[in-house]
Length: 77
Length: 260
Image 1: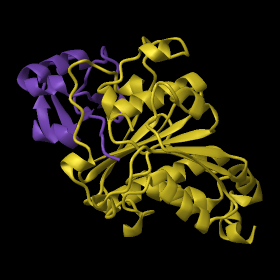
Image 2: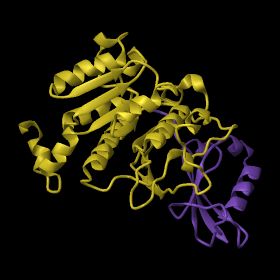
Image 3: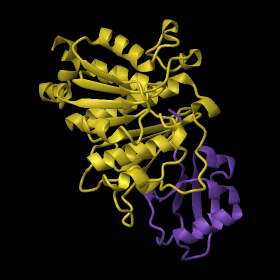
């Protein structure tokens, strides 16, 4: 099933906004593990995962058409 | 009150909101890119007491964005230069300055004296410190941060509609995290800090007066290139134990020597 990935800040150096094809019944935690395997530099990034504009619980099951955002904290001031 | 007439006459604002501002105390941590415009607007709006924390002195490469300072201020403590200019702009106000880093040693005592704290810092370690000290003191604070052309804004630790979310709920500290680059590393267009710092002042005014809903329990992301924005709802981590006075000294904060 397709989900829409949105990324922000320095995460855009690692991957871009894109559609992704996931297995049915993928939980947010599984999705994160998959991302970290595919893009190991993300292991050094803190980021919050939001699904459809809401910070997601790790056990939330993703559904077709969900928008998944990866938002890291920024530093500058 | 002639000075504030134009905001008093705004519907929903009124004299009662102005009086709340006069009775309020706001602390700005960091008198830099974010802090300068925030301070300028809070001072202009009539906040009764303003506190400014910053150990730094003004340097030339600050001037494109730290708009309280002039070339004559180069080498002076930022808090002194800021106090002088703000004092000229609004002589009625009380301004307290702290020419030091916010640290574990002073954060709890300083923050206790204020109603709301503005984050004008440039490193996540500082934000963990502010978040924790605000949590112990039960104060809201306005988070803002930039990365090149992008910014974030949130009112943290503000009990709103039964929910009170703080920085650690959203960005828990992990040992291997690399902080994103700050302004002196990634660069920034001065005016971006002006926009975001002004937004912080607006959020503080909303929280203090209740005049409008503030950015509580949400993070607003904004791209200054095209003003595209994205906001997410945030919520407390139900597995996290909130910081109290005893546990405050044992929270991991990141690189200690990079505190404001």
